Length: 428
Image (tube, rainbow, N blue to C red; front, side, top):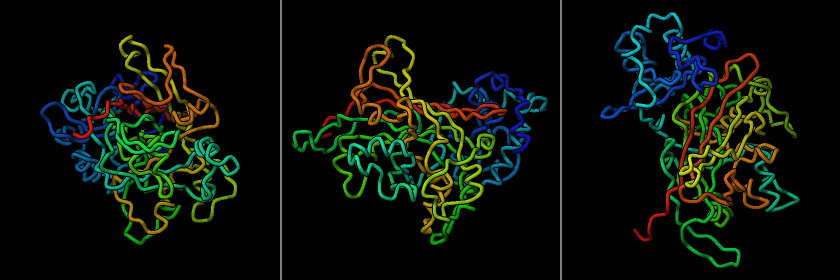
């Protein structure tokens, strides 16, 4: 850790100093934004404002290759430069925004209110891989399949994953159109039509930095430096289609519908104060998935929540209903282990590649991180009396998260939102 993590550090941007603020000066996440009539460009969240990196460069407040690429229309260039470059740029920005900086005189030129900005996908995603790293998620759903062997055979030995669809990754706020698909009803009839079982999955997004040549493995020593940062990810699922299509090759059309990600990428550097020891697992991981660093600091203290707003709640002005309240630190496999295993065979991970942590479920009933788990004993009842087994048209799911640790300033991730839109007419 360094001066950017100092809990006493304050910003001249007043909103950044408010208690409970997602984006205090200790955070400084990167994102891509635009205003009406403007091209997308790089920015940094600070309180309720965005530091316009291009404007800061023009005002000669920032300089260097990292600042130049970060000011572009995607974060791929900054991610390609590696963790060292982004860490140095983050330190420059922290000094620029710290209380007492002469940059305050330029505030009107370099800051954009968040309310005036449209957020874009942080990076161009060439590849998206989704993991299944929560013991509790696997065990809850696996018991229904096989009570004696609820976990996949390899689960305790490696981070299980599949290669998902990159082209349908979307930024928070875009609707999810209810998909058509094929599945078998309980009476055995095979049907085709709009899915009846739309679900959310509360996950952490892991954004990749740097690049390894095809055929060159990623080791556990390399893995932490390959993680640029983190965000929130909703891996929307059509459960009826998924159950029917999964054997034997895994998810396909049930998962390629849409994947929503939060617009701000919280850097790995910002999360240093929230690192903690990884949970002990049995059997111990094989040496290629083990390191002293991972055992001591591979987990992250991040509280993650999922909320639901129905059309009726929206019309009545009701507050979002809390569905899930869970902790990322309890995941069976760490982010570094996911990255290392992904690259074990020499797979060339690219700057801006996206990994999903898998559903972040914990052992408590309140920590079940999808409706497939929450509804195992029947439909859930919302505070206004409505019930849900699966998401209905007009339902909006909202993810929020905060990193917390004793002695550190808590930082947030913003929101990841998405609403279910009705299925289109078939055929179009």
